[in-house]
Image (tube, rainbow, N blue to C red; front, top):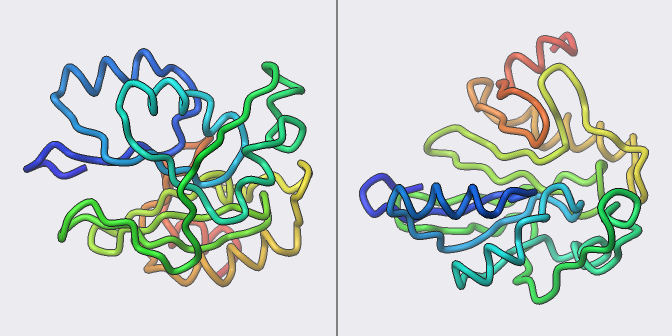
Amino acid sequence: MSDSTRHGFIIDPGAQADQLLEIIRDNGLVIEKILLTHGHFDHFGAVEELREKLNCPVLAHEKADLFLLNPLMNLSRQCVGDMIIRDTVKFKDGDTIALDEAHSLRVIYTPGHTPDSVLLYNEKERIAFVGDTIFKESIGNYTFPGGNKDLLIQSIMERVFTLPDDTVLYSGHSEPTTVGAEKRIYGM
């Protein structure tokens, strides 16, 4: 979010589209893009309503269609009924998603929770949106379809723990933490 322009991104809008739209409207925000860290329904449940009302593109990893187009893989069939997301713009590891010159996110591929998992890193502000790759004091779940424990641990060690220790990690299901705090838990 750019404080000066009031433009920003929404990351992983899992539910409550009406509440998100109210916040956007009440604060005079303009959403440029909706970004997904992976293709599970609890991270995209509000996408269609938001996309329709905000008229903005949805971006996901190049492997995301395996989940976004398959209710069994994205877990919606088992929980809330079939949900799919079509027509996403694809990104890949190393891409930069820019809001403006001062605000951008680097895509860092972190497979393991799912084969399409990424974190979105803002180097200037030292924040990373990590989806379900890592949580405060816990690694992500790797038992869902497509999950892989070895890949998840490798992603955390090589892609998350190589970020600066003061980088704040925002996950999908826990309080924020930092790279340094999580490294200490694992004796690093």
